Length: 142
Image (tube, rainbow, N blue to C red):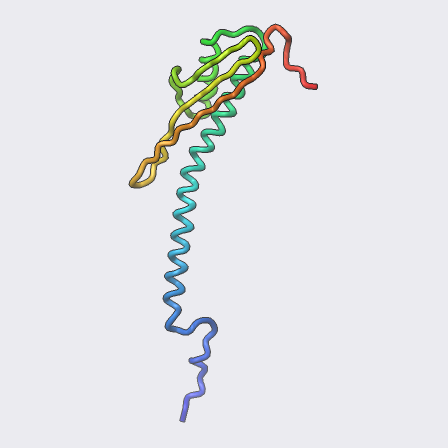
């Protein structure tokens, strides 16, 4: 007499294929975690880039407004603002170019993105220009 249990009628894949599905899912999860880790590391570096760009813009707005400022004052202001973003710059990595009407600041630096067995050097450069408002009063928004 046969046993009338429903052992052969399981939902899903047959019993032989269940291990393959689990290991495939595990490989997929490991791949997703690895991509997330790499994205996080690069995200930190580019977040720093955007912070330095913002701090450079603040220093440029300060330098372009108000009274005439020397290049040394502008250089010190840029270095102080960028230091707030957590980046230490040497004076040679900041270039200030002035014409009669415009002021341009170029900041360059490098950062290393560290992985367990590899370090990737990245180089960044921010160039921003502003029209000088010296001797014309403050900023006028129309």
